[in-house]
Image (cartoon, rainbow, N blue to C red; front, side, top):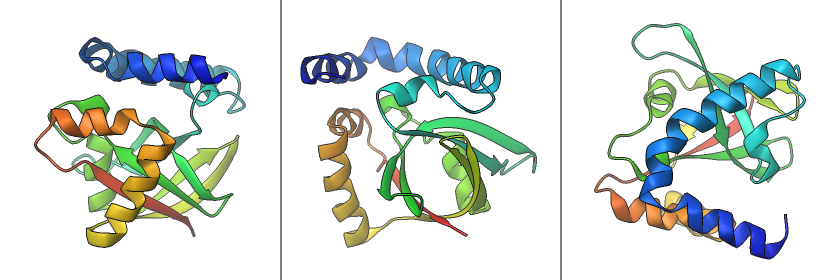
Length: 158
């Protein structure tokens, strides 16, 4: 996407109206398109790299599939996931799932990959956060809206 288009999308994604609609609309569209294309297309990945995270529900113990933006660090080895929840008050459920059961899997570019998630803290989180803000500046707006510290996870291929 051209620079002007990316900046426009970043601006729109930082609005409160987007934060109200996006958590419901984007994952549903992503799941539907991903399923219809047999894992070849993730709609939101047309703008940002994305994965489908399959984690174990913290309460239910059932598999939970969640489409998420990600920042690949080492192509095919590690990924960063941000629990921004579009700047909403609560942590997204998938972050609680990973804290409870860090072994999960992702669908990355149509391939299922087993991963282990680790919550980043302290200096490691700070360094990753700086990189994430360069990658997707609206994360700063999301953090500014909430009192909680947005969770950042590093997924590593098992």
